[in-house]
Amino acid sequence: MFGLLFFHGFGTFFVALQREFGWSRTLLSGAYSLSRVEGGMLGPLEGILIDRLGPRRVVLIGLTMSAIGFLLFSRTHTPTWFYASYLVMSLGFSLAGWLTLSTAVNNWFIRRRATAVSFLSVGLSIGGLMVPLLALALEGLGWRTTSVAIAVLVMAIGAPMAMVLRRRPEDFGLLPDGAPSRPTATGGGTAIPSVDFTIWQAVRTRAFWAVSLGHAVALIPTTAVVVHLVPFLDNEVRLPLAVAATVVTVSTAIGIPAQVLGGMTGDKVDKRLALALLSAGQGVALLVLAVTHNLLVAMLFAVLHGVTWGARAPLTTAIRGDYFGRRYFATISGTMNIITTLGSVAGPLFVGVMADRVGYRPAFLVAAAVTVLGSLLFLAARRPTLPQQA
Image (cartoon, rainbow, N blue to C red; front, side, top):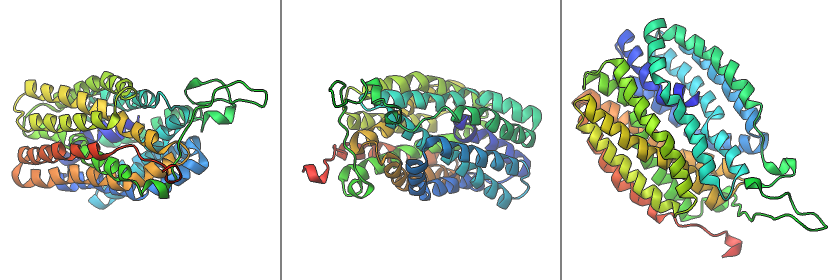
């Protein structure tokens, strides 16, 4: 649901709003960028909230806010109302989305963490497979009616699913990865060692900054594609909206097995090396997009982007748990989000501004070069050691 409505599907709403109001690409992409600023700045607070209340309560709060946001969005007539409703919507999805759900997964897995996170990523990608359906709904029902329907579905489907979330296995006498139950005074059981950094210990490590900045750069092509792929294919490549949405679907479909394979591989190899290679691959994919003039090349981009983004996505989350542990994972990840927000904001906003001035292609070329160079940051992210163990 999050993947369809807030991640993969935003570009489809982008086109609908542009057609009705004639708003510039800078104005529209600015809403997405502003929402990422909001998510980044509130990241530490969200992390503390998750660590204290647990994922289930936070997800329910987030779903309620996102439903209200869609209802407000359906009444949009001015840029101010659009921005305000989108911020409410995005805050809700932030609370109900990746940070909260990945915290739950991180608490339940250690040895198979990357693989587990990859299946969570698959859930995000499945939403992308439904982008053509969203496009059909927007064209058939209109974006206002579709928004109201989405608000109802968010609560009708999301709330019951949130009720099955549990904070950590220890609350039920279990251990991560399905290990034998906690040892008792009479012996038996196998404990799994875990290193837990506090937020203050984490921010003093080079790994914290290298992973955060590397992830920020990797998000430049990711978020730029989320916001601008469909408009680029619709406006400059001259593909019909439904066909452009199909390119998103192909990329997402390719990304699903890539995420699972990336997660499984990440549990066996050095994650930082894999992240550097895959991030550079995202830059190459963006280069292909910059020279796209027909559907065939657009599909080549879809395959490259699907593989590289898909395989990278679970590793950027899993490496945080590997390096900094489970106890304060949400707080540490939320703090990292302040930095990764730089990429989330810069990607769509930079491409939107350049597209309004010189077109999409030069913007994609510059973003591709920055992404390839930024992939080197992951190589500096060596595993940290707790101060008392140094």
